[in-house]
Image 1 (spheres, rainbow, N blue to C red):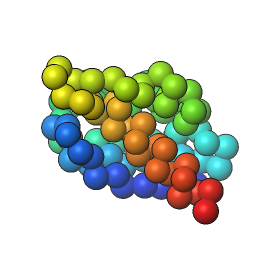
Image 2 (cartoon, helix red, strand yellow):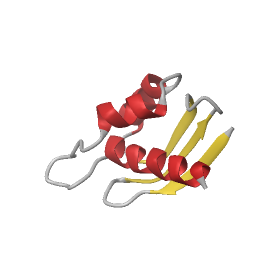
Image 3 (cartoon, rainbow, N blue to C red):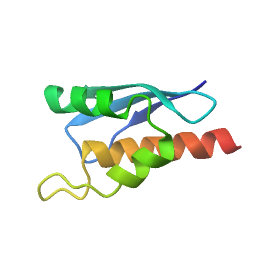
Length: 87
């Protein structure tokens, strides 16, 4: 299992906690702060998905005029987790 607690930047949520299994399948995601209902939906939708598939679908999403969003920050967390596990 791989795990990361990612400090978000530029979003209402402050932290994303992600656990991925050894096959790069997301086991659980928790957001701290942010739009509770929307983020619960994202967490449920990405659970059981491959890391690469989630990155491909959610990367670059913006929230209003912000340069990022909670889904985009989840991608940053997943990319950091991939980099961390490759070392």
